[in-house]
Length: 380
Image (cartoon, rainbow, N blue to C red):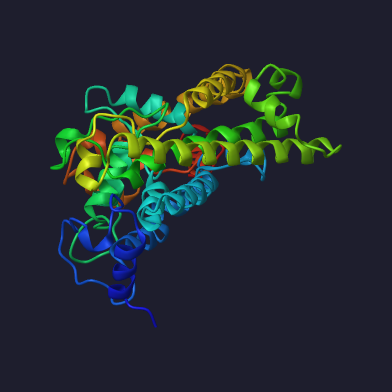
């Protein structure tokens, strides 16, 4: 049976000098005895998977509300697809797969029901009470809100996982977490990989879901260079299979380009160790300029043709009405919330407690709760 010490010894032999070794972690906020068979990052990953917030991602919107179809991605399937991509990249570059996996599995825990639309609504409603941003909420969940252990709140994850969550960046996420972490500058390369793996996953599965739903069409995609480069190489005459093989090919191209360019960036920047990573002012993880250009074109297409589609806009309008209605009802009379939630109000901020409760809801629960409160014929 392989022990934790043996895993740590293997990491020192196999990982790149700038990879994050489990034995070198800055540890947990609350000291705990190490596990005999799992490294600290493996343990973090397992704690995240068993968290209540992780299970709720199954019924939280990526683009489509859960009841619109069983095959569309949810926040849970997005996190799993992103984790597969992150592990592949980390493995190829000699980085710590377990650390990257833990960060990406937790990166969407703080998302509201109804996707980014819900986040916009809660941020507006909370503008005088600290606002709302899902990366901060993910960190809040793993440090405060998950209630599973007798001696501390949250999951007591390692410093590196918490830092990766706080500094997660993408086209939608621009956090400013430097002041909250003792180590300034860039996070680990494992965390930086998660930023791109997240983007690779959502751009490509949104293509798949968009085509499946009819929100976007092949005719529209004929204008997109990255799509056509890969679509033209596929031999299948069955449209559904050809589309999926095209998306598979794009993902492979994205990952391969990223791995090659990142390796080149690390060499050019003379990155020798983790300290060099943190102090570097250069972009270390990324794709070639040519691929960047094609990827920006694809993202602009998805933003314009899919995310602004009238059906998605209708969902956003519905999300605003539902979440604002719930927020104001709880604000007016907090006793209509469950007793265990109401009890927390005396221990913390009034609006933040309501915000935590709503942010933790699934799409399904929010819809049902709204009906119970505002439909006179619905049982409460």
